[in-house]
Image (cartoon, rainbow, N blue to C red; front, side, top):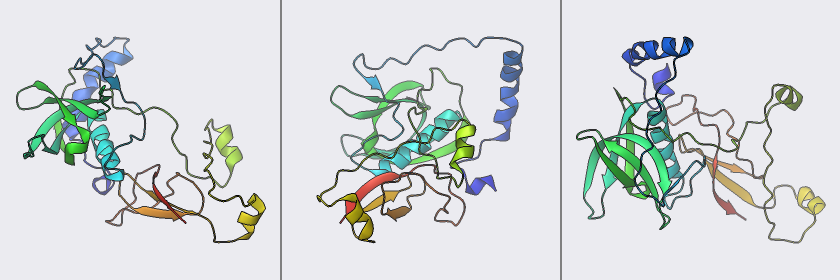
Length: 237
């Protein structure tokens, strides 16, 4: 059942291999600190949940797949077109996203075939396929996003508050008209329509309010999608 809900299933052996580390942690052992991957002294680590890319929602979907693989210590295959226009598939260990001084978003990785450090321009990645082959991290994996995440609307917000969840504020959208709020509310279906997409399954949603929460929905295969937020694509009037 999980095979239809996750980008890739973890091999059973990976759970057995992790048991010694878990038991050592329970006994108070401290894991050795891994050296930080150094690739450019002026590069900055990207921790934003949603990364602005020229490729839009497609690029965000690829980033989510890379994050899934890296977090679960799975090698990932990327379909990549280099600066010469040559297209090939590379199997890599993904470690971090960084922004160069020139503003490019780079994926820092180790090439599995020869263990050499490589950086890949994210907008040149055409496809991502998580494998079922695990790897032992050589550097800290810095792909976990930080920052607010949209939470689906709940019928009882008080219960959510008591559980410690923070309900995010919906950002204010500048209005192109000087009409008052009461006139906008009374106009029914008039006003802008916000088009969002799920970065996991690429399904689009039209909404009359700027709401990035992903309510329960199905992917293209008819199974539950695990996407928890939406990406704003455009606004129509």
